[in-house]
Each structure stands twice: as structure tokens, then as C-alpha cells.
Image (tube, rainbow, N blue to C red; front, side):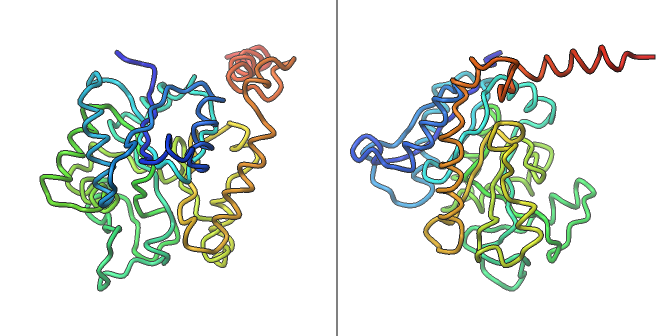
Length: 286
């Protein structure tokens, strides 16, 4: 089993321009000791399937049982060390995990009469799993393709399925795949591993649900989701502000420095076993 996970991202001008947003992602990956690769240097971008094709080609070089995280390059931060990722991924007992968001192309409610470019309603998935999710429910009910993880062999099946079915948008295709293969996909609606955050969309006018979707300091200090995705940086609203504020915070918290701090201070990898040991001593089994 290949238990050290790999992060795969795509930026076709990273080496040429040292793209600022991709550099931030790489910086957070390095700070948290992840293996990673940036694909696509020098390629011509056609559509989202340009990225998927490059990722598919690289997946074909990896062991089929390796766990990988496929992430956008321009609006994602890594928040946690990889130490517990594999065990937490395996605990979900599903070969593919996808991040979820509140909005369907800027709107909370799904409109069955609208032709979406990037959204597919997950009705078949919800029905298969006995989940009562209505098109007007204010929950994370839409797939976001910018943050996804799984075993190489299963992600290859997903990507090959996209091309075989003629998709030109990977996000819409991933949702359609979840409907067609509902037992192969876990929707991370509570952001246990992957957090796609839209709390700044429309400047947070849908206040409470977007407040609940905001990253907490605990999350930024590495106590919950492993990756934070803040899409919509080019669409205005509060997302670009959120993206920069998050970077300001995590720059001040470097896991490499924290790991040398006394008394497990802000070092989740060391603190978790310490905390569990103390809990067992203070609350022994009857």
C-alpha cells in the first residue's frame, strides 16, 4: 500500500512567471510536509479538460492504490500536516471524496429550468443514499471539482468516464459521475477533509449559512480540514478579501516552527496523541 499521499495541481505558467497564487499553495504544502507536483508547464489551455488530461496522464504513472489529492492551483491553501490524512480518508470507506459548496453558479437554489455550465443536480445520488436534500435547502449540495481526493485507480476511472461521455467541464462531470456511481463517491458536505468555502460570495449577504461556512482560526491552525479552497477570486464580492486574509493568518503560523515549540503548543500532530493519552488517564474505562 502506498500510504504517503501526493498532491497534484496544474498551472501552465508556474515556472515561467512564479504565479503568485500557485506559489502560495506550494508554500503551504511545503510548510506542512506534503509531497506534491505541479503539472502543465508550457501547455496551451483549452478548457478545464486540459487540466484533467494532464492529471490523467500523470495518474497513469502512479501505483493504482496510491492516495492523491487533486487541487486547483490558484485559490487553495494546505492547512494541515499529512500525518493523519490517510487514516481519516480511509475512515470514510469510499474511494473518492469530493468537496462541496453552497452555490450553483452564484445562486443558492437549484433551478431545474436553467442550463448550467458547471453544475449537475445530485438528485440521483441523494436518492440512492436516502438523503433528503431539496433544491432549495441551504446546505452544501453542489460539487466543486477544484478539490477532490481518492485512490489513483478510482480517479482514473472518473477521468476516463468524463472523456468517454464528452464532458468539457470537470466539475459538472464529477457530479454526473457521482449520480452514475453513487457508492464510489463521498460528498464532503461537512468539510472533514476538503473545505470549499464560499463565505465571501456576494459579500456574505446570505449571512448565517455563509458565516457557518467561514474558516475558523482552529481550521487555519490545522485542527479540521486539510485543504481550504476559496473559489471565485475573479468574480468580485468578498472572496478575494478572504483569500488574502487567510494567507496573512497562516503566514504567521508556520508548522515547522510550531513543531519545535514546548508543551505541544499549536502542534496538532504531537498534541493529538498527548491529548488522547491524558483523556484516557483522566477518564478510564469503567
